[in-house]
Length: 163
Image 1 (cartoon, rainbow, N blue to C red):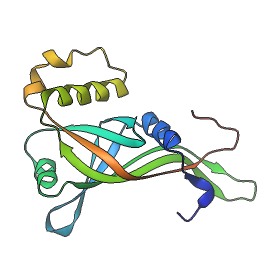
Image 2 (image 1 turned 60 degrees about the vertical axis):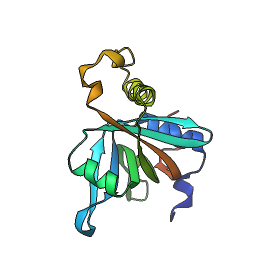
Image 3 (image 1 turned 90 degrees about the vertical axis):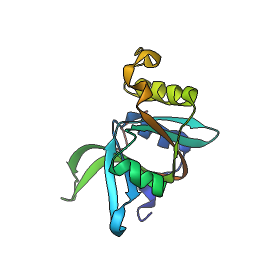
Image 4 (image 1 turned 180 degrees about the vertical axis):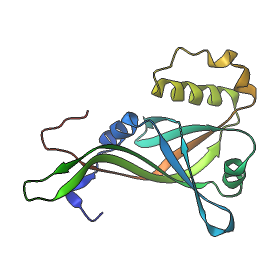
């Protein structure tokens, strides 16, 4: 990372940034050698020192086909706050971001899918939704990504506290 002073190294702080985000972008190794990136709703948790991300999919389509042929992914999430003028006349963006890599694993056990979907709903403050009685449960596919590598970055005013 070029700007060491902006690096977030603590996994708990990185996880906190991710928890404040409402969208992740999942980058995949697309067809024809071109990357394919898609914005996704998600859920996440910190378990045994690793960040785990959950997202859902239909059982068909471009994302489905790519992930089944190559599960390696990169995920990105960010929070943009504003552009700020500096005393010296420069401007800078005030932001927080997370980038990580891992493999998207299809969850096949019903209990794992329900757990992941509840986690996702909890991320959006909808934890009371009855997942197990949802008519779409039989059709939805759910993926889990254990982030093998993850980094955080921020540029926040020194007085600001976002935790």
